[in-house]
Length: 79
Image (cartoon, rainbow, N blue to C red; front, side, top):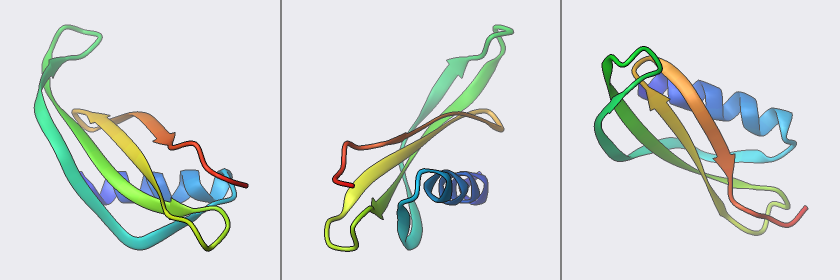
């Protein structure tokens, strides 16, 4: 799942014209949650760092429910 989160974050960063830093992901939280079909799945939050200017570091997150990416978010940053 970590590889899926990383690949998705990398693609999203390219789309948003920012650079993924350190080529790493950190699992920040994990627990059980129900999906839209009411099946219990593992919910995971991965954190990563990115930069828009090359000077500042910001945090982003990827949320997975089971094997599906449900959300990718970048912290507010300078452009």
